View 1 (cartoon, rainbow, N blue to C red):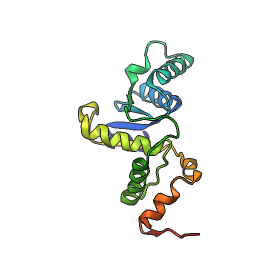
View 2: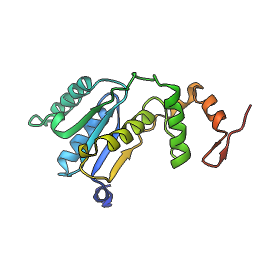
View 3: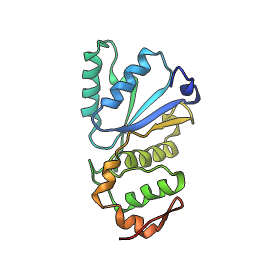
View 4: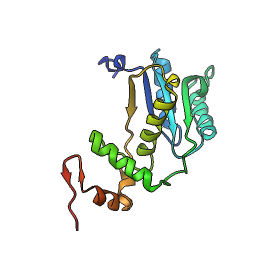
Length: 168
């Protein structure tokens, strides 16, 4: 992305954070490349203290002992986060609406929660972000869609982004 000049189009990078591995990788890459992007880890499965410790350990492991995770990553905890794999009916409706509006499928375990939280943060705390050009990294998580909990929500909407839902 750097060699293609893509990152010049963004001020911030945001992503769902569970274990801290993505945060550590992006922090190290951003630091070593001298990038001026602001990195935001949106906690959806664990608490910030756990991830800070994990990222700090990973930084130490690669020889970056003069920096701390707190200096490299904006670690954002949602007061609404119920924990890993826990979500409400309202959350499921929101995730479906994201798919309808954007064509991007988000799972209820990680990515959907992070998208919802990112939008809330951008609306309620815009000063937290370096700019308005935020790149959201979709890290996958589609397996959270296979537990059947989204089935009824999909049937209620009948149409999702011009794709007809077929009933059994």
